[in-house]
Length: 211
Ligand code: SF4
Figure 1 (cartoon, rainbow, N blue to C red):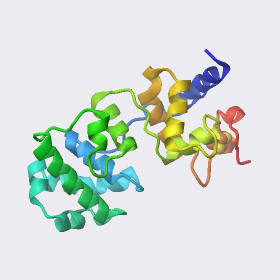
Figure 2 (figure 1 turned 60 degrees about the horizontal axis):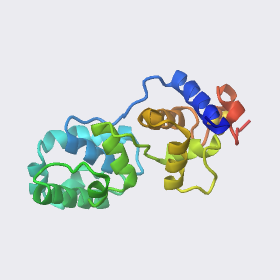
Figure 3 (figure 1 turned 90 degrees about the vertical axis):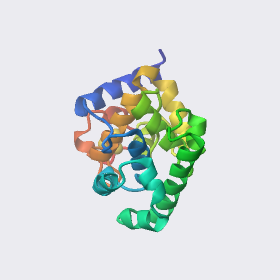
Figure 4 (figure 1 turned 120 degrees about the vertical axis):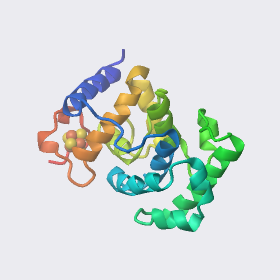
């Protein structure tokens, strides 16, 4: 194990103590509900998505019921979320493809998932890890920020580079849990505007503490 990997595991242990039960905070009961919730979560909070999907998934209780709705109706159902027009269009097109190309089954490979409208690498990673426990590290804004502050990746690193750096630093069995813990740490502790540096248990490893 390299020195960097040792440090990475120490950081993981400390964040685990803060957030032992970090998990996906999107509400869902079915596989397509999870996929749609992740698609809706782009540039908005999970809480805002849950408020919308509580009603949305009650109204549409199957993929077919979504297929039958017009894009305008779905726009209206999700209009409290940012980018709702684009998201409605992507949901409609994705549901059409799932029904007509995949016989109503959500595809299980990264390539097939990423071929769906509005599903990028991050969405596919979150879906595969959460639904099928495939080892993946989805890099969102929190994972990016925390990874850069902790020196896992450079300031200019893209999400893909950060994902690869994290995969090289942590054993595969940590990946899914690491993703959740970094999100919780970024969302509730090492926030973008007011990181809680004074109480941070890993400040000794931080490259940019705000004191
Ligand atoms: S010291 Fe501050 S910026 Fe660094 S990881 Fe801790 S909370 Fe985040």
